[in-house]
Image 1: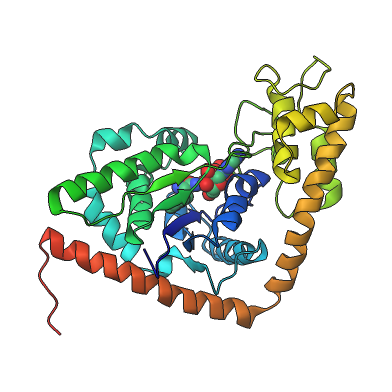
Image 2: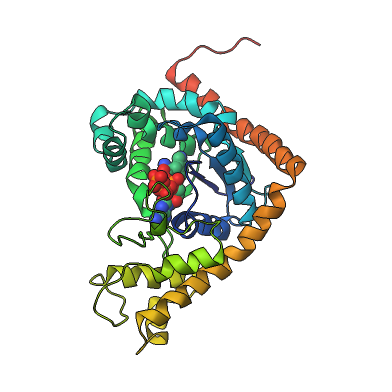
Length: 334
Ligand code: ATP
Ligand code: LTN
């Protein structure tokens, strides 16, 4: 609890260009939760280097992601928006927690298996212990709730297990967090292969809508989206391509799948696809305009970075000092 409010933590990696999946699965929920909770939204750059990065590129993307959080509507006066690398407590707590995490647990993580297969030439220890760092992110702020897409549920479950294990040994140190997965848009699929999630690291640019895509590109990608030969519009697992388009449509318009199916009754894919495109374009337009405006305001963004890193450090240190005492590290002499 901070000032009588429950705490929320979430983060995104500054790797690749953000997709509509990131927006609908994560960012959009962050906005609706931001009044109710004391929020920490991090650009998790420590996580990014688990795969090889170009330094200049990473710095640029990290800044643009931080700006995007604000452009999406998160007020940095109310929400703590900061770079993970500016708060050393993340790495310090991660080390401690890694001594309370079993190899067997990490071996089961599907994201590690996927990423290891994708980056077979660089299966580093950081990629393996990535979920421990994520647990540290969350537990450092004593977060009650963590909004994520469904793909992160396994990491959240591990975080809870680590927190409970630690608490069982040392008493009530950590708040055990709950995941928050939004009802719509929790898993947006690739436009080219609806059996895979839309991912910013997909090599095929037509598979994903990027948040900065212009309206023509968005429309073109939807028109090319892979569907099926059934020809009718139903919300069913048997038609994953159409279901995905309806999910996107609903997440952007606030309609329910039933309402959407009714709206397109008797219509063909040729009508559904541009309607989805239009819905996405209207959601992204204000975001893109705000992004352009904020990117030009260097002094403002710099001030957000500085002030919020201080705020994050304050809360992070409070937890870290407590944990260090509990495990038996010597007190500092002042
Ligand atoms: P990559 O595919 O490169 O591993 P990513 O697109 O999954 O990256 P992350 O930074 O790992 O992006 O995820 C940021 C947030 O967006 C997470 O909460 C994740 O659950 C959510 N998210 C990512 N992709 C989707 C998707 N297709 N649908 C819904 N939510 C998603
Ligand atoms: N692992 C997450 C990003 C992430 C995160 C977090 C999300 C790192 N730390 C803490 C929520 C809370 C991902 O790959 N999407």
